[in-house]
Image (tube, rainbow, N blue to C red; front, side, top):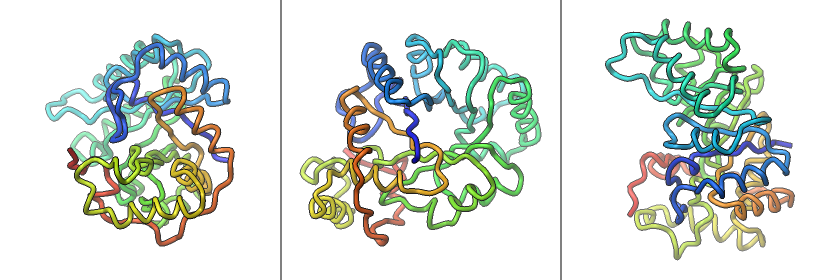
Length: 289
């Protein structure tokens, strides 16, 4: 069974189209972490770019947790890549209050194709050799990025979006290929930043052009007697070759609902229920009010 890792973007900034409460407060962070630990979740996903997330986690105490963080894109005026990476990793470790990361991921695969590629890869490998991180990897926005990354670098971990509507990781063949080569695959955006869970009458302005497929998803859930959350979870947890599904929550009650519904088997959605419209399945392209 695929395990959960806890995403923590909400701990450092307002994140997600369905987020109505803003950044999660410190007391709620502690409650969420306590409930997650009790449920057997031991891996956290964060990033330097997630505002105060790392600092919030550090204040909560990271003993016993496996923490994955992500390096921000290289600055345009960078001159000393190894020093920059050392500073970034050192800062993360200090904020988190730990001595080793489970993994360090690149937040931008484009950094592997600029003039600093060789220095970047050498410095990353040194981070792993020095024991500051157990694994190295990349966070991608679309599987096509791997077409360019794979010939020059074999990451230990790949994090990618995947959900009922966004099946690019599967349809491209990359999920099967990564699994075959022993790469640890972590999928995020299981709820498409919460869009899959919002009733039609509460969808933000800007999603009307995709109402056909979104309404189809809602109708399918209603017709099968499953909550959208249950259906979305059943889809991602049925995938072969995935180590973790990264889930983010704003409150301990949301985490409890996910834990409860994930234990209930659900029917698979139709194989043709997906979209290839990047303006829908890539939240970075959203223009909503």
